[in-house]
Length: 96
Picture 1 (cartoon, rainbow, N blue to C red):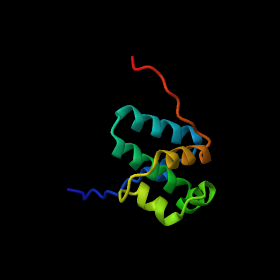
Picture 2 (tube, rainbow, N blue to C red; picture 1 turned 90 degrees about the horizontal axis):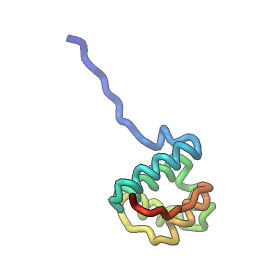
Picture 3 (cartoon, rainbow, N blue to C red; picture 1 turned 90 degrees about the vertical axis):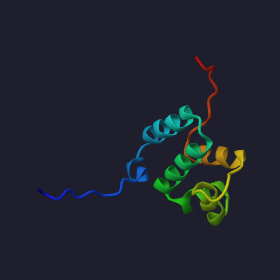
Picture 4 (cartoon, rainbow, N blue to C red; picture 1 turned 120 degrees about the horizontal axis):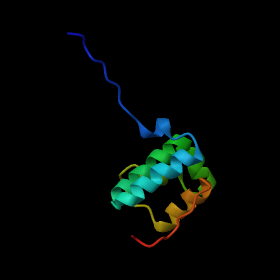
């Protein structure tokens, strides 16, 4: 029987367009789990370059990494700054 070789899958490798990023983040938001939302933001920041995101938001790169890669909990203002840098915004709609 042939050996099947597998490779790790990294979402950050597949988030190339603003539409990809928006759809990925929207799926995380629909799930409603805050840790999943933060993980998605981390994937997005990695896909765009964590240092670039930190620089454009005015945040320390080390602090941003801690906040988005599971070692911390980013403030809401941090989330908003990241979204603005990405050209995205939150939109509130009624739950149906």
